[in-house]
Length: 366
Image 1 (tube, rainbow, N blue to C red):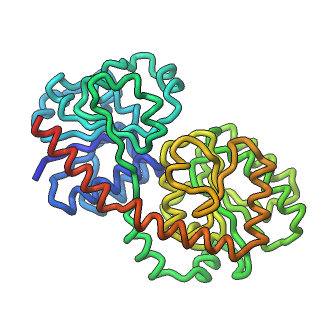
Image 2 (cartoon, rainbow, N blue to C red):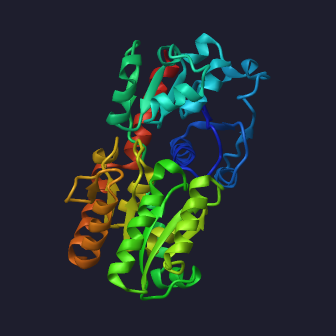
Image 3 (cartoon, rainbow, N blue to C red):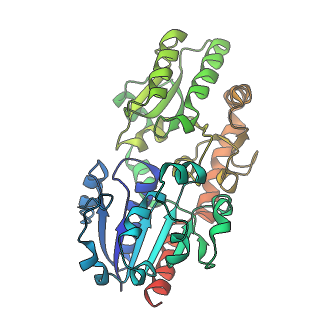
């Protein structure tokens, strides 16, 4: 088995680092020796450590590095996110051939403008560039000079979710977080930032609550606490709406599964995504999903079959879809069941690990 270095851009509770955490567990389980490198600390360090995968905190983003002395120790290196180019720049040409660069960012031009030293040539110099969705790969396809691009869907370990569901009761978790047994929860999970479209979700929520007049309907936004300006605007909008008790912001938490379990509807209102883990997790919890039709999301959801899709920014359509599922509980239940069937068939964790295992073998052997 191979000695593999996994390089993450941070250890925050975000989709990309969580993907790497799941990947590390899966590769370790099949016998690989795993080391993890991050330029900064964060809450995920504890989760890695629980799995005996304690990350090394090493600021490869700075100008100072002595990593070159160790790079030959590894059979393969997986670098996570476009921000990982900083690491790739600091290793030798031979080491770059052993790198699989996992990209999750669909907003390519934003990053090329933000990272002025990001050299497009790096895409040709690494062993493989891995995309989580076809839609995201197509955005970078003109950089596929070496024909080294590959798609591997990023998925979670659904067995972990199944164990959580078996061990916990919805009513008890509701009480734990201060909700009533009869409360009907509509949840969104993800960092409260501009691209997530959460202000528009709150605007739609306000209209739904005005029309329904049901005090038991609660909207829960899980992912606050970063202090971004958009979160301040969202909080102000909620405070002025008259629905402070029915639109709730929850700070980032390691207990995110609690909120999937107690929810009745899941909403992803993002403008930009690649292949969001939050949608797949909602599918694993058999939730009816309403999502924007952007980038890789239509590769996850078939509109009308295992979820409902709306155009990004169409707040009225979002409001109507929420109202529709609130009125049509049988349809909502069917969408959730179909979503669960889909991840079991199409988005399997062992299949993702197998594809990465094959990739590692290919790049480590040249």
